[in-house]
Image 1 (cartoon, one colour):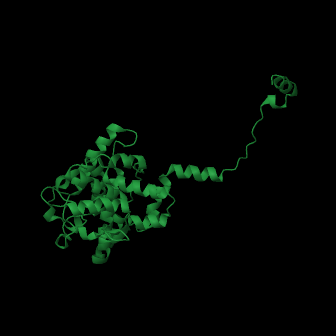
Image 2: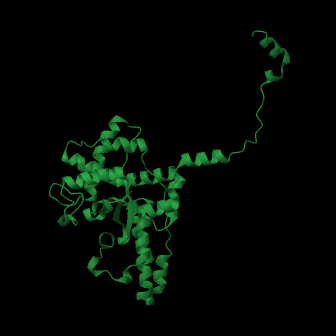
Image 3: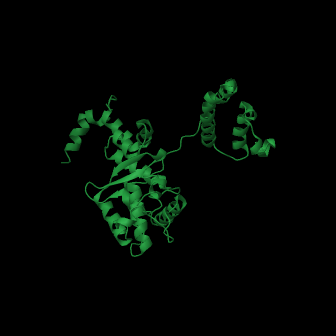
Length: 296
């Protein structure tokens, strides 16, 4: 509105926002900012949410609000899920140098991120008090909308975390609300910081095996990887949904759709051979068979 319409933000009124101006904004996003359909749809969803609210707050402009709500989303390209195989995860976790303090921290952090399929912000926000080091081993993650979930941890992961917490005096009572993973200034690691650490080790692992480590990898790739590995191990989608903190199992179904190996195995199990195999001509040629037997 300010750049294209020369209307200062402090001067904008509700009457200035019409269906036409919203459509112009969405077009500007794609033509000038070079945003994708998916990004356009996210912006439109935010606008729609605001104008659904305005329907109740300012019903005198209901017709215009409904015109804005009638703007449809564009069809966005569905991207393939980017995940690592189990061998890829093993290779990645072999890269941190555990003879150094940072290496031990990075190994504990990356292994935990994979083991509990944490979002990067959930990992950044972790406190020592979030981890239960007694059986049953669990960790409390605070997800989207401040929704907490309890995720079980394996003994192997607990060994890394316990060693790391002991070394950094994070098991002491006064450390309970400190950041679990922090930088040299004792500040909690940011999303960018965690992504940078992952990228460093991914680049190292890719040199050893380009096949196992994809070119594009993010913290969410580890979350996808854990989800796919659970599915491939036969874990029910409902349990995976709760493990990931999804609202609906429909969100979790993207992993079932992406797993081509499981789809192939399911199809092969259900396959019924209805095509009669053609017999080679020589099988019914008795003269040829007798002649071949004579060599025995």
